[in-house]
Image 1 (tube, helix red, strand yellow):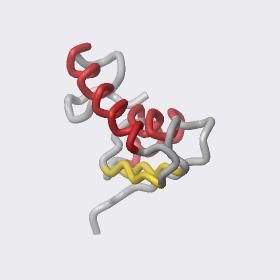
Image 2: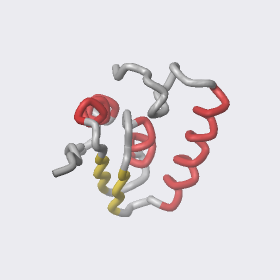
Image 3: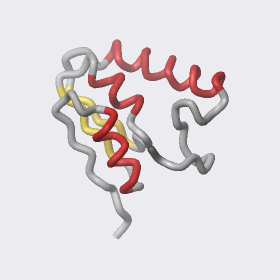
Image 4: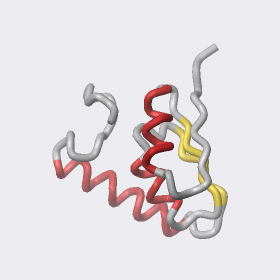
Length: 89
């Protein structure tokens, strides 16, 4: 699990109201993603990407943090999923 630094929302490590707000946004987006190809840019730890994957045909989660990409792959272990690192060149 990623270390909580305050930079990103990590389940069970942030204020419940903040987490619920993020969950509501992904629930809304998941309805729009049904059977579509989805890019989750800035996916962080991947909990939202996993929510999108429940409805979308394909999901690609990307984040500048390599450790976030690892967390995404773990969160979406049951889906065909790719989480490349978006490093700055």
